[in-house]
Length: 137
Image 1 (cartoon, rainbow, N blue to C red):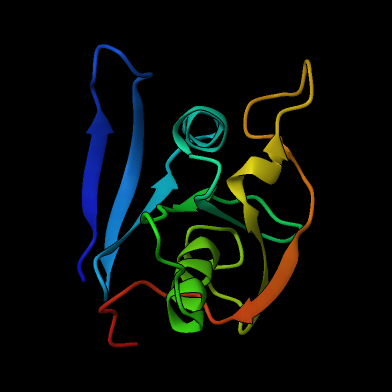
Image 2: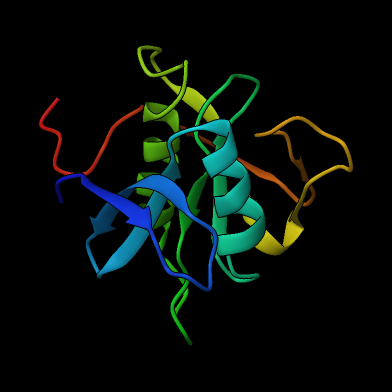
């Protein structure tokens, strides 16, 4: 599905800006636009059962695949979310790209770390080509 732009303005939550995608099966993917947005998405917005993605070893967006109650995303959905993470990174024009993924509960921010810097545990690597849903290339 095409890209949508979203800005969180809820008075009870933090303000952030992100790209929003809807994948087949009505899965929602959010990709931070800035380092500050990445922090908010990864640490404050993502629920413990959401999936977290980031291209390995290069700057890029933190990407969240929002979980659904009692449903686990299939491999294709996971790969599409990983491809979005690769697309929103400095590796966008590379061939295949390694993307780290883990559940958001395994993502933390080290004390005093600069914006956009997180630590992850229990990562899995997925190799994908950068892309966004509905992109014909």
